[in-house]
Image (cartoon, rainbow, N blue to C red):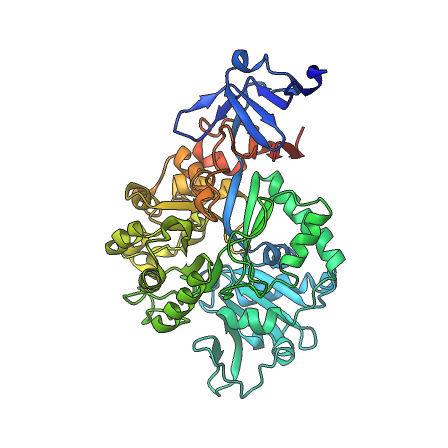
Length: 534
């Protein structure tokens, strides 16, 4: 009778190079799983006597913890992947040509709009963004909207402006969000949150059933790339948590999800950061302070090198302090978009104003981006329960123009990951998709090489490079500190969730410039294979 209750594990993996990430160089041969957790690691000889339902020979393959994207926009990235890619467009005529080729397919997803993405102003022969008149060459009856690579600047044609309420006498209540022509009429260039609030909300969305199907497929694709947790920031999401809950209800949530509402200091039902499960939970309140380097709108202490501007802030210090304090006191963690050194200083001031040292690391702050800090502020960062979700993949976007926009000295300090790590500041890896591709191996490579993925030998800030181990650590162990998940994610050790990857190659021995080509053979979430190439 007692034999019925003998412990039986679910899976024993052996004959692998399992990097636990509890410390650099800590590699084990075998790992034992029960239900959704790791229950033991060690040698095959040590674990083979445990009764087990299934055994998997890893055939010498490399295993690492599941990768975490600690800052992206899931629903927006799904939509953006349907848009016309304009990354390689080199002139206004080229933009029009690429968009015209997609005219016949524009309503595949029911939007009826013609949408473009990824535009680089610095790659255009004209040296500036196009205006409504340029997009009107394509059509004045079909609404058209295109976005810059950073998504902080967007261009609409006349039809889109009409549908979104941008009349000839329109004046934005938010400074620096609308550009005007010489006659004082909006010229089609719409910036920052005004685009999300007044344009994205107008573009038709699929019904909930369709959205659940296509977004579940999108999440499955991310799992196949090695992501096991996605931190998604909601800006213009049509269904928000409802959509993710529906996918979870259907059993099709291939990645764990942490959901960040924007500018909500407490959900109406009283839920705060941490509410939910380890599959779908509520993250921090997201707020914005400045814009982007690409649109010259991130707030700097000194002017940009190529224009007489220091960027701009969306909120005043008083507004920041009030919003943060309200959210923090309500029990919410706080994630703040801040890129320029002036915006980072304002974010830190707000964090300090809200912070209660009696709470400490039980409620955290997330300095999202943090590309261009004043190094004098590092000590302030270290004193706070702070993690910096950074996007090393952006380095590829700055090749060819960072020094022109920022000047040589600031360009060398862009994405100062080595400095952060040496100072003991936690940094996590992310993509900010759709601004960059969500493939985490792109970001890992850029963090190591400080170069574009291919096609250019330019290195940006060579002294800020990190090792392959440190780069992966940003997407695993350190990323688990975002949303207070370090107790059960980020490393492969007993008691942790069995989220891990079996890689097709040894990422620690291949040429670092080939990391972006890495394939994942198997992705495990909670001890179950959610995607496999074999």
